[in-house]
Image 1 (cartoon, rainbow, N blue to C red):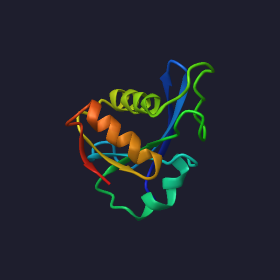
Image 2 (cartoon, one colour):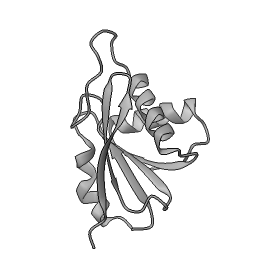
Image 3 (tube, rainbow, N blue to C red):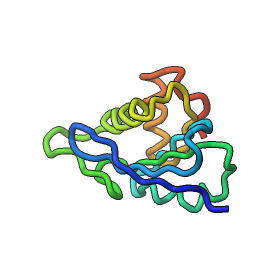
Image 4 (spheres, rainbow, N blue to C red):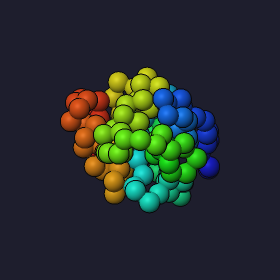
Length: 124
């Protein structure tokens, strides 16, 4: 059975962050974070194979997929993407969540976990 998919955006100071989710929001959340050359769409086929007992949420990093890029000016670092994750976690009102990533998404998760300890209950 195909999971229920929802797309929306979250407001950030530089523009919109494109979001996509699969499953029931009442289930434990898993944040899916893509790599440098990807977008949230990279998780579509994977999510269909995962159990229905979780709520899967992915986003397009700024300048990727359907998300607005950062504004011109300061050099963008991994910490800017960590701020994107912070905005999403706050928007979702999550106190704890699992984190599934690959490539650069892993580095973002390590930094986020260091700056906001105890929120990520499991990293994959």
